[in-house]
Every structure is written in C-alpha cells, then in structure tokens.
Length: 77
Image (cartoon, rainbow, N blue to C red; front, top):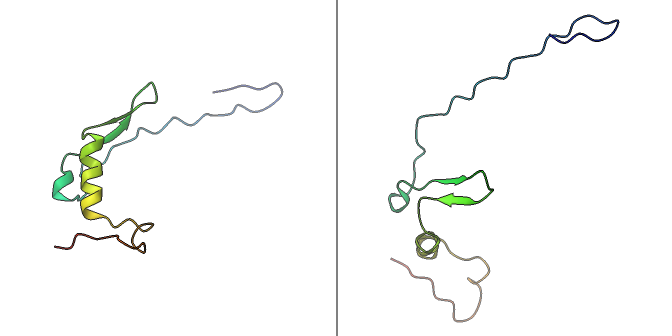
C-alpha cells in the first residue's frame, strides 16, 4: 500500500507470474530441438550453429531477390 499526502491509499497490483507454455510448437524435422535465447549480456544463444541454420534455409527457402535473375537455379526435388 502506498500512502500519498492528503489522498486515499493506493493499492499496488501484484505482478503476475508468467507460466510458460510447456507444449512445444510444431517444427520442421531438420530443426528439431532448435531454440534461441538472449543471455544476460544481450548475446544471442542458439542450440544450432549458424552454418546449420543457413544450410537449412538455403535448402528450403527461395530467395526472393535472386529468383528473377538470369542464371538463378532453384533446386527442385
């Protein structure tokens, strides 16, 4: 409770506890177990290496900037 001069007491709300959702989102099988967090120093910490993430993106995502250029070849399965 916070008392201000010549005013009624103000009741402060208690902060709500964040309950993390224990259910994992559906992900591509190649990215199973992938997690990204930011540590106390502001650094990005990942469970997979950048090289592995880039390899996955190159294999599964078409680069919109390159798709209309001459000589661009998309790997089709």
